[in-house]
Image (tube, rainbow, N blue to C red; front, side, top):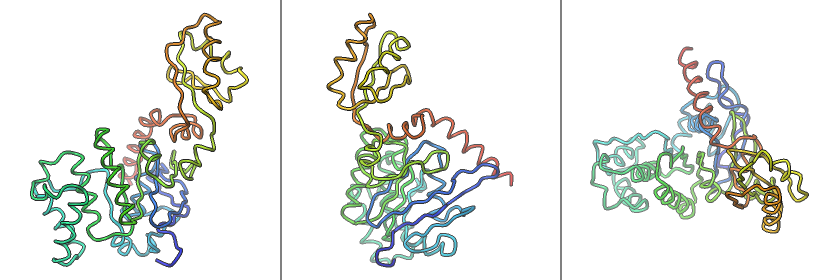
Length: 333
């Protein structure tokens, strides 16, 4: 890779499945040694983008370069320079963890001595050294994910793709896995691209993020910069009569934005702690009780809501339906 060149450069990348556009002119760049998050609901185009960057799918239009290799004209070079952990498990459950690693090393022509040494180092890195001889079918979901990450690093890739690496894992296991990913980036200086719809995880881990919705990138920057764009604190207040109180609260001078969502009045304002008493007093004066009230700083979930008018949860079902339809259309071609 040329000095100063980005580890990944994407320009107008597009993918059509029949009559549905799953990825629509996506562009971004990732500098080496960074953790980059591609965020959005299921069906937004995250996994399809990753599949094109890893040469599993061919783009309908646009282009991308990974480690200075063109995904269209140099797919073999791209594959040799990356590691990838797919959303769906690809381990052989009837083999031991060591055997799964060894098979991967053979496929990538890692010399035998180096292969044995690297397997030991990587199993230690992901905390599975004492279980290397156990069959994968005895592993928990979190252990399998860690093994897949170790396997993806065996041929020493410069870029690692992680497609929803914590999907389906319990919160504690997700937290442990993110700790491994952060340490991997810090200690090995590997560029990591991760897709996820867990906004809180990306907020904590990623140096830069791009939020994708309906196949388009709608916002891209560091998590801190994106949150600064929407500004203010967010107050969630639930009353005994939200419809009655909403216009009263929205009219308060300190309130910048307000909306009713999922049975709660969501309010955006600066220095929320100075206005809590005012909000409660307005409700009390109207004889309306406050059943709950919470204050939080803006999150990436708030950023998604700001740019789309929807929460990630609201998009989950519709996104899955869109992608199922896309795949059906593509298979009929």
